[in-house]
Image 1 (cartoon, rainbow, N blue to C red):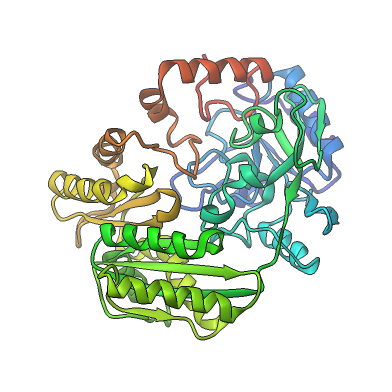
Image 2: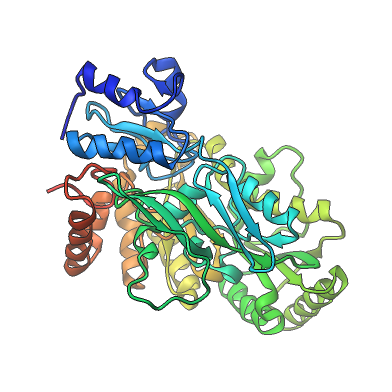
Length: 475
């Protein structure tokens, strides 16, 4: 593997894209080298911005021939550092941002074909223009790109009803490590003719191939929507409320988000114009119900859920949004929770999942464990209760030294992940592994899992050029 690239090799790579799209100046490269949480700052001899799949293939052919490391990058919104090139490693960044076309939409077939660099918001808007829904929803939808969403098997707030990105992909176009293009852009609902190869690349974080286009699954747009904000006394009460909501709304339950009281305090303190819709409580739930018929039907279902929950003691206070603006206000409180933690100093992150029925016990034990091990720290859990994924973040004690707290990141991880392991959970629920958790994976994954992943990597990328040392380390 080339640790540093000779000037003539840099020129050979630069010549593969059109003028102005091979970036060598630090000022031009800067936005591709800084991770959103500022945990990673990268270094690269070259940022390449290919115009199409043909140019991506040419880049990978040369990289394979010269054993040059390639770091594919989408919107640079990843949270585990997988998209940031390591310092002194000679890794070339290949940005997919120019591959941003919507190639086709088939409303009757409920599918669309888009290129990897299309922002998620663009994909959603194109589906809406055809009176269809692409349901993947993330807080970063304006800047994240569909190729990155697929490469990380993105989750978000609609997983409860529609599944992860994996469930929304019908087919893929992928450039392999040696530059060959696998055209798997089939738009079939069923295809059992051998192995489902596309699934190898979904969630592989660019380590097995570079996704350049995808055939996506669309849905008919709901005709009605209702949202409720609910104050609950405990996570156990929230779990009872979830069961009630699922029984009443079925597939119409399109959102169920859990937020701790402290997470809400942070949001109210730092989000401009934020207002709590209910009385204060230890925990809060945001419920979204969709209907194929009307807002009135969705609201009637939601009100029935809330009336039953309050009568059963599962909910204290509750508010139902009376307009689309209020629905957006409810979601703004939830989506703002990651951002506002920056205002409270250092925050150590955990993206974990456990079986849904174990969530209350996990939360109780994890919160007790971190406060015992780190006196004064402030657990700020929130997330997707409907699919068992919690962002178990821990903010520094008030007045503590930020860097001193962050320096204990691995110690905190060990405490939280020990509780996750007790419940047979995952330490990388939706953000992926990247660089941040590659060592952690080696200690938490069964040995056979790691062996099989290494075999796949060796088979599809024998020279180890694609996103090296992400997910699994080079041997």
